[in-house]
Image 1 (tube, rainbow, N blue to C red):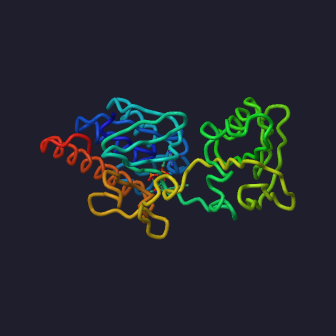
Image 2: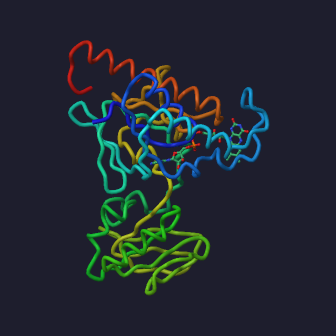
Image 3: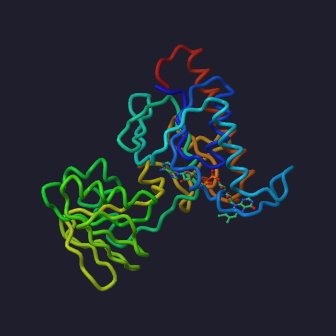
Amino acid sequence: MYDIIVIGGGPAGLAASINGKNRNKSVLLCSNDYRDSYLYKAARIENYPGRPGISGKELLEELVNHAKKAEVEFLQEKAFAVISLDGQIYVSAGDKVENARRVILAIGMASPNKFPGEAPFLGRGVSYCATCDGMLYRNGKKVTVVGKAENSVEEANYLNEIGCQVTFVSDKPAFGLKEGIESVVAKRLEVMGKDAVTALKADDREIPSDGIFILRNSVAPSDLLPGLELDGGAITVNRRMETSVPGVYAAGDCTGRPLQISKSLGEGQSAALNAAESIDLEKKEGKSAR
Ligand SMILES: Cc1cc2nc3c(=O)[nH]c(=O)nc-3n(C[C@H](O)[C@H](O)[C@H](O)COP(=O)(O)OP(=O)(O)OC[C@H]3O[C@@H](n4cnc5c(N)ncnc54)[C@H](O)[C@@H]3O)c2cc1C
């Protein structure tokens, strides 16, 4: 069990991880590739105190190197579920489940607009994780992959390998798909079905589907951790960066405006220091798990 699992490797998550280690806590940083951070796309940052003109890429690489030096453990995976159970918090990422005393959500501005029909059919044919649910559709079942994440082609190829009949839908042509996977370019998508999914409507075409894998880089906070209190899509936090779920903190763009680097770094630091303090207090009081 880790002391702290941080989800998201942008400025907020990296600051949280570094500060968690500074407080002598074991820290796992679970994130997509750090180049997915919004910061990586910023060509010139003028308002980062002390470093005017630095590029986002440069700043992010410095933060990653700092975290590596601090001996933060890295897990390059997308987290798709956080579950609080018996005083511990479990994080599912890729095909792994890790647990911790505290979790810090630093997932950036994660409020993906859902497709019509997506939410009602979640768990009834709609899935966000090929590794977790792919096996349900082997033996020739029809699956449609909606490719919005970097590794979507890889995941579609995996589903093809385990025996699914795969159609790949994206908003631009896809490359690297295995033979036998049909690629469809479409902009307007809708999940169709009755009791369970039957098809994906892609522009004017209906693609018959037993399962639809919608693969994005981010997972909406409410899907990641059901029951999390939100305010207009942003995660509600108090001054200690605690969310409505005990033991779970949040920091950075995911807590709302201003969407800025310095605010994200500060919130990440604050979340980690408060998480570390609460672990120390708990240990002092002799409570076991949280
Ligand atoms: C073009 C551009 C220019 C900008 N210029 C400036 C500027 O000049 N000054 C300024 O202050 N700010 C600027 N910003 C904003 C700044 O980049 C953000 O405020 C900052 O990056 C937020 O940091 P964060 O850590 O909260 O989120 P992010 O940087 O978005 O990082 C979140 C990370 O978490 C990962 N992630 C999300 N969900 C999951 C999951 N479920 N599992 C695993 N990993 C996950 C994401 O892939 C990403 O790597 C700019 C942004 C852009 C796009």
